[in-house]
Amino acid sequence: METATAMPEAKTSLIDLAQIDVPQDARPHDPDKLALLADDMQKQGQLQEIVVTPTTSDRFEVVAGVGRVQAARKLGWTQIRASVREGLSEFDKARITYAENEDREDADPFYQAAQLDKMMKAKGWTQEQLADFVGQAESNVKIYLALVNVSPAFRDGASRLALTITQLNQLLRLPADQDRIALAQECHSKDLSVRQLKALVDQKLGKTPTKGQATTLPGLSQGEKGKAGGEHDPLMKLWDPLKVQQVTDPYVWDVAFKGPGHWQFDAFLGEEPLADPKKELGQWFLKMAHALGETQIDQALEEQYASRKREAQKITRSFQSALFEAAKKGDIKSPAIDPKIAEMIARRKAQRMLP
Image 1 (cartoon, rainbow, N blue to C red):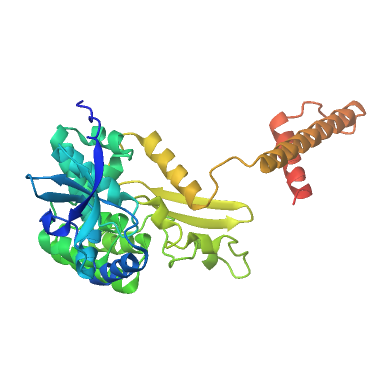
Image 2: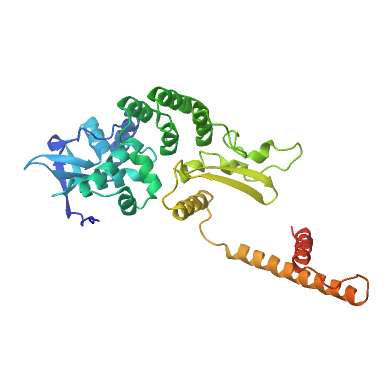
């Protein structure tokens, strides 16, 4: 595997905007968001420098910060502060652009896919090698790269609708562009969750829901539609896809509330066999933990669990002792008490004693 070389050193300079060129394949910017950026730059100045690389003795190409360049021109500025990096390879430019957009909420999945594709081709890497470099699960990278070869009509339409990578992954299951575009528009207009979109794609493909598959609306767990008088899910609002699902992209999941202290999760990690199931499932668990805001072991809860376990063991021992004492007195016929049965009974007794 060819490794990534160190990034060329940079120097900061004020550069005339007239000397700066924007790449033809640069990410298109929404006019309204560009106007907000220009307004912010007018009030606060340029808070973050752009990144450029020299193309000739007096021309520069934008590597990161196209929006800031366009906003500066809109404001009538003549110069902009830039980090000038000489000798950037195509790989370097792609990884800088990818990193620049990775943490943006409005990052275009198609544009990010193009940067990943450039990096992989520049180094001759496999998808697995690329995934290791960018710190993503291989299945995530595979989903992004699937966007590279879609039709221009679908790409342009889906980009305008600002669909997430998880939603796009579901739409790509459909073979026909006509169906993809129609469902993309429906997903946007009805604000469908990923699992709702998946159900519609399944219908298009002639698949019937599997046993236990969710049919709930956004923000509702399956337990909400259980028997009348049943207990409501205390975490119902947390399952809202707008609050949780985006954090667990590109994984699709559902949850069913079965009763006090009992939730059942159904994780959908991909249509095809996973290259590394252990890693993929681990990534899903980590993303879910982050989505719930719990990424560290709570020592207070751990002590509660340990205390409950000690109490249960104490009750089990007491129960077994009482049974053997009864056997000695002849109150029961056999002293041969099955430990598993005794433990089960003790556990039930313990649970009734606990909140």
